[in-house]
Image (cartoon, rainbow, N blue to C red; front, side, top):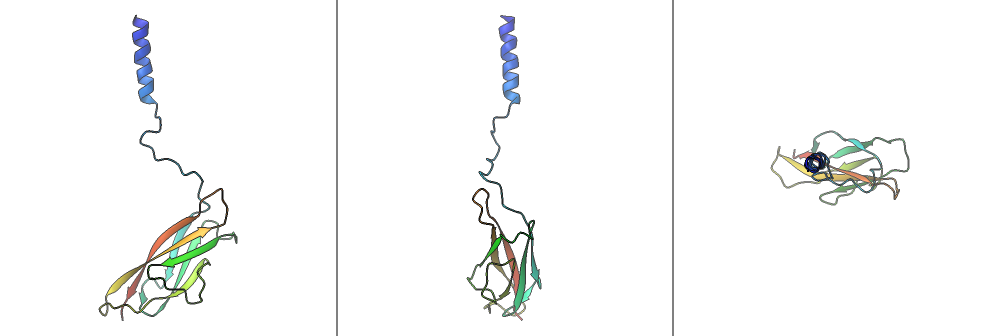
Amino acid sequence: MRRIIWFYIIFLALLGACNFGVGQEPEDEYPPQTRIIRIDLTPDTVATRDTVLIHCVIEDSMDSRFKYYWGFQNDTIAVNGLTTGPYIRWITPDLSIPKDSIFEIMGNVVVDNGRTDSLAVGEEFIIPVIKK
């Protein structure tokens, strides 16, 4: 009888020590294709109707298979009409805001190399726009 009690005590202790994935977030089905290191804005605050250079730096920046897909909250297009390169020039719209006030425009970029065994990565960024 003591053996059975000790067996159950040890069994319950081991069961409590085991982690069956409870409380853990599930892992993605596929790994990410790359990692976005940073997004640079030059200049970092832009006047209305001015141009900003937006550059997405990724871990595999020398891999030419990656395509960059840019988007903005107000659906404006880049200066050169391209929205698929690692950097774009973008003209800020003429906003109806008070003079010398700052408005933030949301943008995003998705980086994809076309592989189906891994996930494209994306990141949002903010462009501070000042009315002069």
